Structure formats: structure tokens, C-alpha cells
Length: 230
Image (cartoon, rainbow, N blue to C red; front, top):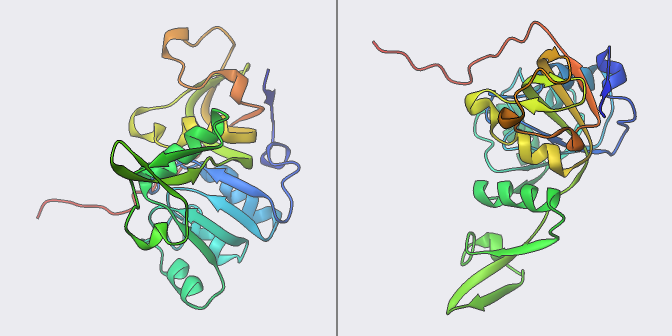
């Protein structure tokens, strides 16, 4: 049964310097924005953050970059963040770029207890330089390791007091697999309901994966890049 937290500080208890953190979201969709703000306020440093991207310059994980709290990023896309680019080119930020599908599977594998797997993605590119490959049915595959993290911070639409979670539409993205791959998973939800109120057939992340849950209000849900008709 998840611990229902009454403050962001309580939800983030134990996250210290040098921790590894998985952060859900795709662009700015489905990010645990209140937990990210709490990490900024905590001042912890030298974090390794695993996330599809690093937000934008002044929102999402980008605020941790601005505060110099991230030592290493493991990501698949980083094109919307100028501060990310500046820190990387200046040698201030370690970056591990991973093909997006491979990143998703590494996280899923980690959560499933699978230490490594072979994939054709990256074969014949600099990603494969110096790394193990094998031939299966006449095709070359690259060995990739599963990913785990000390903590996963994720965002859900609804959760119950037991820790069961429901995501809304594309905001699901990386959140379910990260929930499974964190040693301690902290869920930020928009609505906390009593146990039994969620339809069991609609639950996306079972409570067994969630250690802490907190209901937050006032989510801004910013749009990463707004496109409108002329």
C-alpha cells in the first residue's frame, strides 16, 4: 500500500546528492511538474536523470539544469533546451543519448527484471562503437542493458489511496514503465480517490509499483511548441 503524502517534501524524502531519478513525460506532456519543482527547492546536486528529454529552458526538468543540479542526462531528444546545449558543449553536463525506442525498452526491461537485450537499433552507427553485437538469423544486433533508478517521479491523472494509477491519453507516455523501474516510485496525481473507486479494468499502473502518492493542484500543463493556423 502506497504512503499518501501530504507535502512535496514528504514525497521526496530521501532523495540526496548523487541519486538517479527517472522522470516521466514526453516533452512537457505528463511531467510531474510539482515534484520537479520540489527537487529544485531541495537543492540536491549531482543527479543522474533518465527522461525522454530535459524539458525546456524554464520549465520541466529544464529548471533543474538552470539550477545546476543535474550531472548526467540519459535521454533520446534534447532539441528544445538551449541551456542543455550550452552545458553539454561546455563540458558541464554528461549526456548519454539513446534511440527513443531503445530508451523505452531499456526502462521496460529494467522494470521487468531483464538485465539486457539485443536490438537492431544503432547497429552500424557511432552508438555501437566498441560495444557487443551478435548475429541472429543473419542480422546484427546490439546489446543494450536494462535501466533502473533509485527513484521514479511520475505523473498520473487519478490515483487511489492504495497507489493504483490511471493516466489520461498521451500523458501516459513513459510514466507506466518508469513506475515499474524505480526502486522507490513517487506518483503525483491530479485527483486522489478512495480505494475501490477506480474501475479495476481501467487501472494502468497497479499499486504494487507505487511507494508514495501525493495529490497536487494548480498544474500549469504548458505547451512545448504551440502551432496555430494563420
